[in-house]
Image (cartoon, rainbow over all chains, first blue to last red; front, side, top):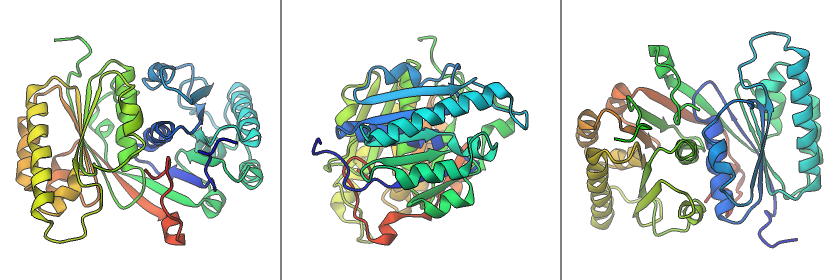
Length: 178
Length: 178
C-alpha cells in the first residue's frame, strides 16, 4: 500500500442552499492530488451537460470523474424511471470504488439531492459509510443532507446563501456557474 | 480582447467559520480555466507553508498563484510589522492585476481576515471593487467579511461550521486540510 494513504478517512458533508458546495469538493480534490492522493469524483444529477470542470479534469493526474445524470435539475417528483436508473448506476459505481479502496478520496457530488428525492435510500449510504475501508475519505455534497447523514459525518459545513445574483435575474455564466 | 472574457464580472464573497472557503475558490478557478478563462489567485496570511494546492497549480494552464504570508495564523493583535508589510505587498499586486484587466478572475484568498485584522483598510478594497474593469470577476474569501464588503458584493455565501473534526482533537491532515 503506498505510504501516502490517509490513516483515517473521514466523512465530510457540504450542504445548504448557498453556492460553493461542488466547487469546494473540486478544490479539495485539487489539494489532494497535489499531495499524490487518488481522487474519484462521482457526480449525480449532473452529466450530459457541459461543465467547465470537465474540460480540465483529463489534464490532471490521479483524478477520475464519472457523471450520472441528464444534466438538468430534476423538477418532477417522484423523478422519472430514467433518472432513478442513472442514480442507481452511479451509486453502484460508488459502492465498488469505495469498497475497493484504491482511491483515497471519493466524492459523491449531489448525493444529498439524490437522497432527498428518494432515488437511493439513506440507509444505503449509511451502509456505504459504515462498511468503507478505514483509509477512504468520503465527501458528500448537495442541498438537503438528511439528518442521519449529518449525524454520522465527521465534518459538516452548511453553505448558506446570503446573496445570489440569480435573484437579480442574472443568468448562469460560462466558466463561472458551469 | 479575447472573446472568452466575461461580459460582467461580479464580486463573490465566501465567508463564515466553516471549512470550504479556499477550496471553493480553487474549485471555481478549476472550472474557469476549464473554459479558457485566466485566473490569478493571490493568497494572504498563507504562504511560506506547504499547501497541497501549490503542488498542482504549476501543472495547470491559465492559472497563476502568489502567496503573501508567513504560513501561520496570525494570533498577535495588532499583527507584526512583517505581517502588515506582506499583506500590503499582496494588496499592491492585487491592485495591479485587477486594474490591468488581463485576468478574468482574481481571487483574494483570506482578504477578509486581512481586513478584520486592519492590515488593509476596508475602504481600499471597496475602491478596488469600485474601480475594477467591468469584465473582471473578484472572489474574496476568509472569515469575518466586513459588512461594507457584503453590502457591495453580488454573491455571498456563508460557510457555517456544523461539525468539525478539530473539535474532536484530530490534527490537520496532509492532502486534506493543507
